[in-house]
Length: 155
Image (cartoon, rainbow, N blue to C red; front, side):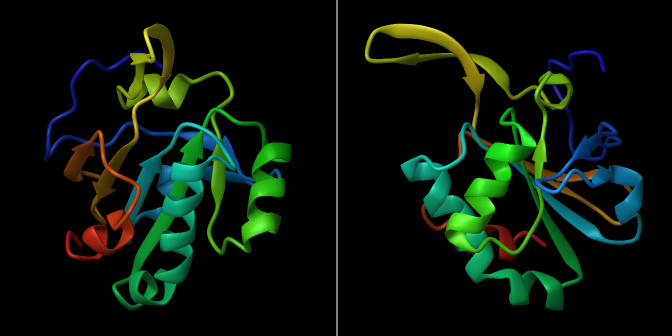
């Protein structure tokens, strides 16, 4: 996939095909007719990412009532995702973007700064994809706490 510098609401969401924590392949086209809440996070089993994932876990019934699917994506491997899912009893797929092609397609693989150090990493972002495959909302630099409930209001 090519890098997309800027995505616009109303545009077709970049397609993807990635394995989850069990190795099952997920494609965007698998979810046609449903709203997809696609959230990108930096790393499994870190404080902010754990808080965010657990909030999505705890609100799954509400997302399902709205016919929405939650998918998390990070560059971690499926094995890392499996440990994270098991440790926190997560009830939605975590997709492994080890080559960062989907992160690049969605424009979330960015230069980051922390404590004077610069490095490449995932900008915590969420994309709401409508049943028609078009981007309904784009949220960048989101805060982990309260994000799942905020997303329920977006769909």
